[in-house]
Amino acid sequence: MLTAPTGARDWMLDITDWPGTIDSYVDVLVWLVGKMLADPKHFYRSYTTHELDRVMTARPPAELAVRAREMNLYRRYFDLVAAGRKTIEVRVQYPNLRKLKVGDHIRFICGRDDVLTRVRRVARYRSLEEMFDAEGPSRVNPDSPRDQQLANIRRIYGPEKEALGVLAIEISLVSPADPSSAKSCHS
Image 1 (cartoon, helix red, strand yellow):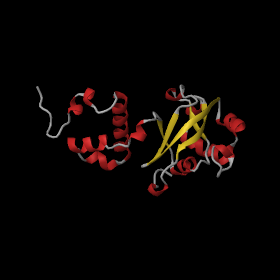
Image 2 (spheres, one colour):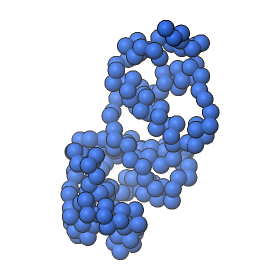
Image 3 (cartoon, helix red, strand yellow):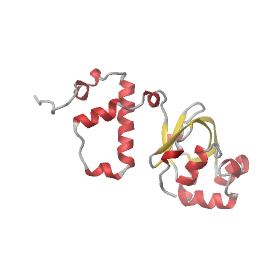
Image 4 (tube, one colour):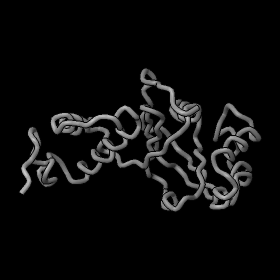
């Protein structure tokens, strides 16, 4: 039988001893992995059981209350979402997004910043042009003309991805981003 490392808490070896629900434990693990993968400095060091205990049990409980799908955004789009100016997020219909529905939550992430949104509507289209014809460009990006938006989105999603179908996800803010923590992420 293996012995526990020095400083290991019971819940680290048996999740039934976690001081919360199993769902909250899973949420904390997913959150912890996301935070560690978001910053390369975490790739080059080890964490003690004491550090993991402190980080996992100190996570604010408010963040545990809402299950949210996480989606990364470039900074220019993230800022528009966080300001409430971008109300349509465009994605291709990957299999993991096919079950997205009204009422779901999406946490948009850019570097260390995040903002929680609620899905108000999901519309499916055959192409980006059809989506822009129906939704209009100003709700996707109020600062850019339609032709520029099409070019930008097509740099992200090539023709083979667009062929999967296009989603227009109407969102509304649930919690605003913290503007004091704005960091650079992909432009």
